[in-house]
Length: 88
Image (cartoon, rainbow, N blue to C red):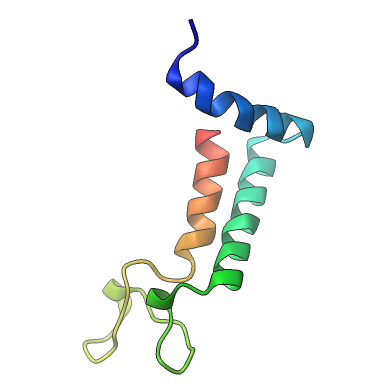
């Protein structure tokens, strides 16, 4: 009997296998970083940008006067890399 994880991850792993990405964690990580960066560049999430279009700094590193965010622009490529490299 197939588990829920097999039902969800099976098609994703099959798609990655078509492109030869199941053999290398590094290759999947690079593809994930690229897709995460593409997501950010295409959609430009509003919480990562200031009014003038510049990126907001990471909240712990921002000064007291700066309006920082907990999810800065580099969060999306890193998330893509971790999701694709570790969890697929």
